[in-house]
Image (cartoon, rainbow, N blue to C red):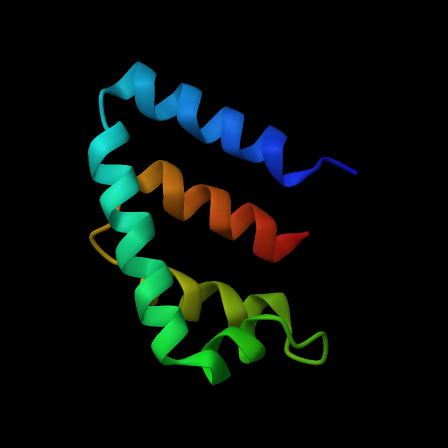
Length: 80
């Protein structure tokens, strides 16, 4: 199992390579703020009885317009 630190390092490396580190950080802060305001949304994404095929479009919709590397990471995490 890969820990969160490894995912964070990989995301940081990608955003440095693409020059999107500041945008990604801003998007991540926005996303965290939105999820703090809507804890039921996070519960839904974390509910094992909800199929991944249902969760992914919800996750992608909540991240529309955000950095694609960040969205890809959260989609991978959702699938795991």
